[in-house]
Length: 289
Image: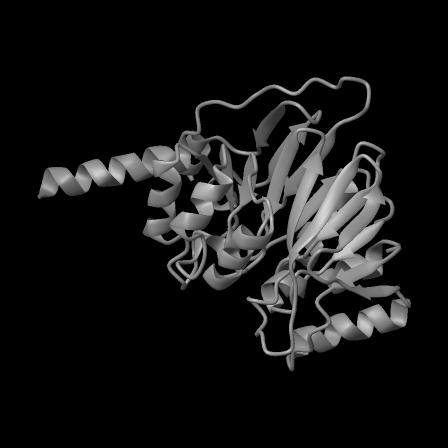
């Protein structure tokens, strides 16, 4: 019994800490797509830099992460944001956005249209109003147009009866032969509909709901067949994220796992054919910490 437990722990530990291979992406002249998974602790914040040097920010983490996101954008020489996408109004996704909207000009805001009776949402909505940021409510099947080289399709959106997580804006980003799924906090029932109505095959997936057991069904992940899985969560969380089942499902597909809890900020870079993953930290740094 003791050996079995130790062996299982070693397997999971190696998957979480030692992704072993990625594919190098050279700039072929058309430009590179860069997707930054910003380490905001227990929450999501993703910066997309398109080949035409457009900037898209998806979520802003919890309120305390606002300064982290602003500092990160400034370090990356972002001076304005072409589109902010708020996937849903939970505090760990929109909490940091007011600080971002106060610090950078934002051309447009795309969201679910759902209201949320929280102080965090009130601050977010007031900032949008005061900054007079044009707002669009996304619908399933919409395409978000920011860069003609990059296709962004909305695979899931809100309906009146859905709560926040099932109403999350799930996105598929396509750059030539490269496909990336950003799953926000959608749940298994939404994943089932996506399988029926959309092509969800992708090279890289940002796992839904921080690796929660409510999402990432085996049927869905088998349709995606991701080479790389990104998980966004804090090592100190009270939700049991990521669920062991989700890790096991990804292991069975031979997906390499990168988490912000282990690697900090993670950058995916692609020329549309190949890709490379740049983690901020290596596993030995985490062990030393």
